[in-house]
Amino acid sequence: MILYDYVLSADCYAVRLLAALTGQRLETRAVDFYPGAAEKGAAFRAINPAGTLPVLVDGEVTLAEPAAILMYLATGTSFAAEGASAQEWLARSRHFAAALGGARQHDMLEVPGDIDALRAEGSLWLRILEAALFEAGEEGCGFLLGDTPTIADIAIFPHVALAPDGGVELGAWPRIRLWMRRLRALPGFIEMPGIHRLHDLKPEPGPDYGGAAA
Image (cartoon, rainbow, N blue to C red):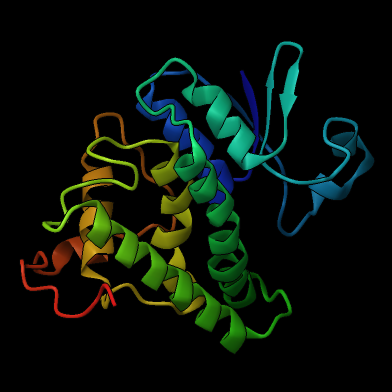
C-alpha cells in the first residue's frame, strides 16, 4: 500500500498510526505540502483530483478521504467499528480538524483565519470529547466506543494532541489527558513530530474530576 503523505499532517499521521497499530506496512511518498503546495499540481491531481492529503493507493483501490482510509485499514482488525456512534465520531473528526487544525495552520503556516473563533470552536469540541469520555467510563478508563480503541479514537487523537500548536491547551481536560496516555501505551504506537509528551510529565489526573464533564 502506498500512502501519499505529509509528515506534519494530522490526518496523514492518523493513517500511519493505525497502520502501525495493526501491523500493516505502508510505503510512504512525501508530498511537498508546505511550502511547495505540490498537492495542487497537475501530477498529484492525476492521483487525487481534489488535491488533498492523505491518499492511499492499494492496487486498484484509491482512497482520498481520511475516514474512508481508516475504515479500509481497520477492516478485519480489532480497530474496526460500525454503527451510528462510529460514524458520528468519524464525522466529528472533521470538526476537530477544521477548528483545531485550522488554528494550528494559522499559527504555524500563517494561513488566514479568525484565530479567536477557531480556538473557541476547538475548545467546544474538546468539551464535547471530555464529556463523551466521562460517559464512556466514570473512572476514565475507556475509549470512545468502549473498552478497546477503534478508528473513532484514531481519527480524533492527532487533532487533539496537536491542539497546543494552535494555542488551545489541554491542561483543563483530565479525561482527555488520560485517554491520550492510554492511546500512547498501545503496542505499536508511533510518534509524530510536534506531538509533545509534556502532558505526560504532569501528575496523572486523580479521581476527583470536578465539573469537567458539564
